[in-house]
Length: 364
Image (cartoon, rainbow, N blue to C red; front, side, top):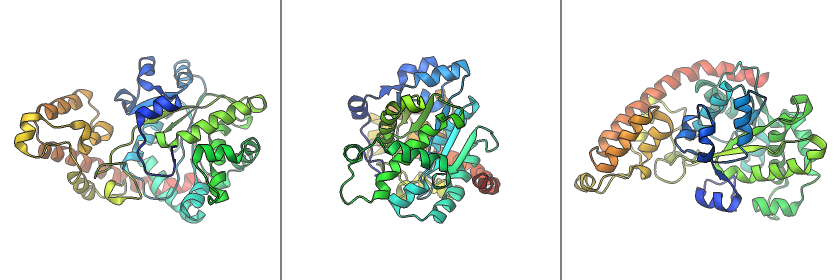
């Protein structure tokens, strides 16, 4: 069972085998200019993404939905979603970003004013600073607690979902609070409401997520089918990206500060954190020169792969040098640390400019 509220790493291969997720690689050649995360295999799986490929190719309407639960700081792993949103924005997608303040209240105990503050100061500010166009008429950011269209739809859809189903999908027990049990229905409504007539009618919709969120996708697809005759919903598509490894190994998590580089960190702090990160080096320099390093086990290499190095040829060269032992971890780490320092220096300036705009967007 996959728990969307834990920080556990999901077995990607098992997810594909047991839950019917298809390899994204099979669709890659159908995209004229796939996103770098798709090209590098970080986006590794999908459900019904062919519908989105067709909409992009034919320039027809489609929507993208990706939520944020305002419960803590935004770390560099979260940047993957923003990078994909920017790509979809360039493709003309209708983008919906629900702020799951109802979920953060029920699952994390965060009150609504605090959730709003976190959403503005951490998430929306960073989304804009990272490059999402806040003035795009097709961008919709909202608090779920204040979106009556979503909450009304969630109530209607809940009519055809029972407690046994929720237990089977999420592992809810008799001690789970009712608000927590209900919030997945809000997420279902978040994903499906762009297809309501008042939002332009049925259209292909994609939800880019980490694999831990797949229970929400499966529930939504089932409910879309149940209500097809009433709302004409098209079952939503989804893509799945790999998690970036935390600084100490394991999953990067906002609730475990030692694992994460936060987007609000100063350039010097980000540099210091990266320099302390786990690498894929051997126990000694002599052994590494002889046997080579293991870039697949290296947090520093992942930072280059996911965020810092745009050139595929340069990345391939670093990978090869590491494997053959012609570059040592210290040299690679120093180079990546300077790159991350430059990135955070630029982001720091952009965050300052984005703050006022973030407040305005949410009020609108």
